[in-house]
Amino acid sequence: MKSIPVSSSVNCLRWILGGLCAVFLACPVRAQSPTWVIEPFPQNDGWGGPQGAPAITNGAEITLQGQPVDSVQTYTLPVTISYSALLEARTAPDGVLWLSLIPPGEPGNSDLTTCFTFSIDYRNYSPDAILMNQCDQSGLVWGEVPFTVATGTWYNVVLGIAANGEMSLSINGQSYSIPSTVVMPYSQFQIQVRGWQPTDVWLVNNFTVTGGSTAAGSSCPNLIGTWSGSVNVADYVNGYSTLPLSLSISDENTNSCMFRGQLIGAATNNFTGEIADGTNLTFSVDTPGVATAVLNLTGASPVMSSFKFHESASTDTVITAVGTLVQVSTNAPSDGSTESNVVAGIVVGGSTTGSTADMQLLRRHGKK
Image 1 (spheres, one colour):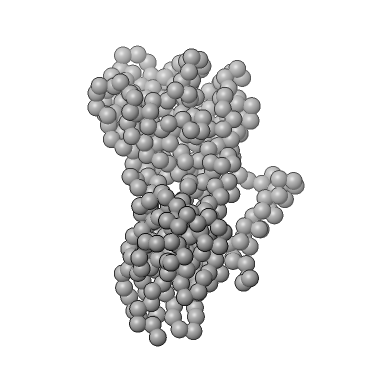
Image 2 (cartoon, helix red, strand yellow):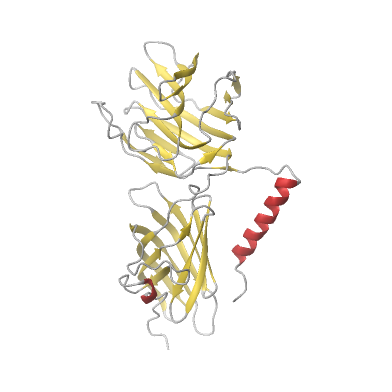
């Protein structure tokens, strides 16, 4: 076996330091932005008016136009959720920005039936307010507390939830008293954010979650399937070209955010991969090199943007490939392989049909 990839060494160091932090130190917890899934207008909503438009987001920033976004990640208590919100205009008699905490598996394309929601409400016929409610028979559990919603004004919200579900709230530095009897009832949850009404535009920036490590089995997006696109190739011997590239992943451990496989070319080379923060992908290859990509789940199809493959220096050629891959299939490879030694392949300039064992990493035209 060849030397351990750098990323594996880093992961070992992270594990060791994490253990030391847990036992000896009060180590800082990093705030992270969720990876968002853009959901459609709820299919079972009886609303007969306009349905708005899909949300626009790059992760930490969201533009809401009547339709929700759901977090890919599932969180556990305790957590601190922070974000800034702005209403562009009061276009309707009333409107609201909902931050909903929902049990894992709650359908994102339907009206919520189980949730714990913090709301910022405006009304043109009664005072604006902030409140908390549950989507079940519990209804309103806190508030309504008078709160002025001024258009064009940023409201910096910090919502803390303790391990026992008790809550704290501050907006623009002002704290609000929440009785200990008001508790968030879910030990594991995802996050949904939605603006209403559909004619309103809510801007949500700097959305982060601190603590609440993602729950086992739901912490990372599922990459299994075929990803295809074009890449620009720089070949030290043969110059520049644009070639098709497909990446097929059939094996992933979503508990630990890792995947694995093989790169098939003139020789067979093993790789392992890591999904960092649900977004950044790193492929560590024995030889011939390494690859990275940024996962984007906000569009109609999942995308690996900024895919970059760098071949390690060798005696005859060095190749770099850069491009974008779109998930075109969520199926496992056609040969049904699940063994650890044949689980994935990358193809540049070759066919994507047949089993993963038939795939080639690089087809070097003109190479002697």
